[in-house]
Amino acid sequence: MRRARCGFGVIAVSALFQIALAADASAQSYPTRSITMIVPYPAGGPTDTLARIMADPLKAALGQSVIIENVTGAGGSIGTARVAHGAPDGYTIEIGHNQTHVINGATQNLNYDVVKDFEPVTLIAETPIWLIARPSVPATTLHEFIAWLKKQDGKATMGSVGVGGPGDIAAESFKRQTGTKFAFVPYRGGAPLLQDMLGGQIDFTFGQAPTYLPYVHNGQLKAFAVLMPQRWYAAPDVPTLDELGVKSIYASFWHGIWAPKATPKPIIQKLAAAFVQTLADQGVQQRFKDIGQEIFPRDKQNPAALAEQQRVEIERWWPVIKAAGIKSE
Image (cartoon, rainbow, N blue to C red; front, side, top):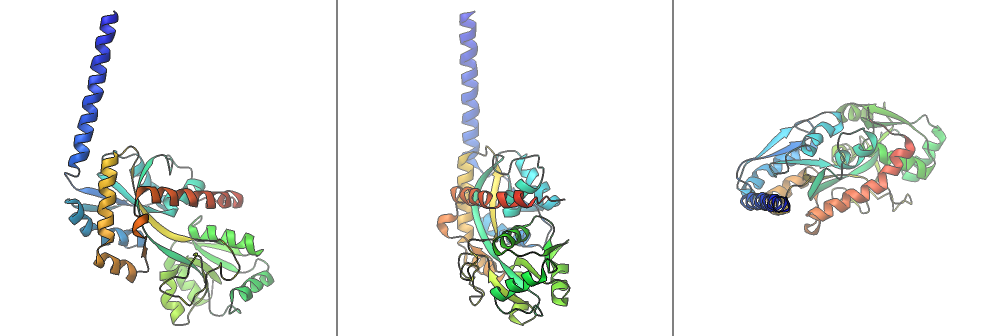
């Protein structure tokens, strides 16, 4: 019996060794076919646009086509789940952002873990959030705006896209820090919210700066502050909240790339290197800049930086979300 058990042990170890060799060989030859990049939002939106800008340069970097597939619904969680439960072979990856990989983890009942079920690949780019108001709001500075909100005593309206997005969370932090009250008005999309802002039906919002930039420039809307540690390159005249005394409310839409958990490290490294090459392309850089997206510095284009970005944002926003009782429908 002892010899039999020993024989079985040798066979088992040998089988595991063969599997490891096969996995290593697969990783070394990767990729041998096209790669699918899941976009968990509709075609034509900001996340989809970034993915499509990168698709051709990624093909040059990887030697295989990159197919963009939009898998939408539930605030991005349906497409994200597809990647979480996907094969860890490098042929299915996701472009997501702080909604899919930070906020949804606290506002939704997910069938996956936003940290444990993914391998981070790299940070891509971010765009800031502005505090913007209709032009008829009787305030020209942030301090005047805060005073006006307090005078309104909860009657002022803040438009938000959906429930539980980055703008909502930033608004909760702003409300708590400034001692103000206002009503949240959810919209199904950014376009109807913008139209109501322009029409004066909504008082203000915390929204993606590029969407509102043309309207601020022509005086149709007013921007009080940017929610970043530094001013935005596209509108350097708009101060930060920090400068104006409302400290440490940093909110942006940042994008990253994830793969399923247990994807081999050599594959993750090849993917990360391909994105570094893609983001260094001058054409990609210009197209990102044209839509208000700022590419992360070269030293942030790696798995560790994305993991750290996600960790910091979870520590910052989950307590705010839970304290406010925010739940996505």
